[in-house]
Length: 254
Image (tube, rainbow, N blue to C red; front, side, top):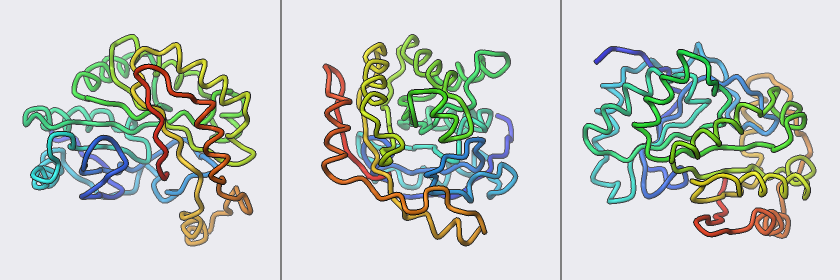
């Protein structure tokens, strides 16, 4: 086992919304996307964060195993966790030695079929029980306006996971007048219907709880004045991303 160093943004001992059951949640540092609604701008820089070895981090997480029950385990999110794929392979390798349920929450931005990345991802996929894939926007041009990047490789990652039989939960952040366009949601629904392993679709209502972080960092908040979605707007989106066999809609907070 190597000694790959992971850059950690923060840890949460008792997470309840990032995968099934009670989970130890690791937020990795670093993200290339600049989502206009991001609530963790301090996690963008890959050079920051606290250095951890996989062994030390797993030892800390495993102390909480008695709280996980039969459904819980470890979730790694970000930032963007797939920017640290080598660290994830080592970390989840330790988890699977102890039969711990593993989840990755990702926006899919680093995904590529080019080597050596795709071979590493294939190895990581074998160690991961569930992917929470955030699809910010189905239209690539709108996705680029929203995040700074197109989404072709993100949709390709969804197809790759489906083709390899890997379970997914799909997440979509609902922002009024930005990601709630009815035709866009219908297009997303049609895309999801082509995937074989989507087990749940979640609407994450946009919130403004991270705005103070922009002020602290001296960054202008991109969505100044944008309201949070109403219950009716959330219900409309849930109907458009309707439940199909093998899929559940679950509303949660971002």
